[in-house]
Length: 210
Image (cartoon, rainbow, N blue to C red; front, side):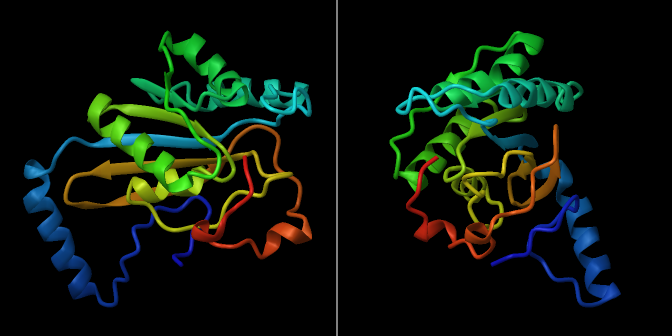
């Protein structure tokens, strides 16, 4: 599993010498004009969810405040698209961003448990609808890793179901170039991870939703 370091770009490559680094830089510069569109994707989990109604809860008051903070964090992103699932908590999280940008969110339905299929569907929608754009995707604790993986990002642990809401992932997706990812946070910081989340299983063993 690749290490995901806070606030740093990474693409999984290991540069072991200055000569190798220089060679890769020259190749990248020479092929830049031939690259496909550069798409920037911001991936976030929905904000803090309410306990009722159980089947499709909205957001708590802290969740509403976090959704507003997300709009502030992306104020300069020049978004061209927004994607959510059909669940109320993802739509409510994206609502302040949609209001600020005038964008109508695209709903990609998520069947709980079909993590990989949902990630692939979101990635396909980004490629088909927003090539070269800047897109916000609001997902769930168990779909965020699969969305990132489908976009060419690193394999990573699922987000902690009870407490992890503040993470914001920025991915730069270009044809014939490894996807780069930066992880940051927004809004009120998350509390320390509880013991059950410190040794979380990898995405392909994830069974809990959302």
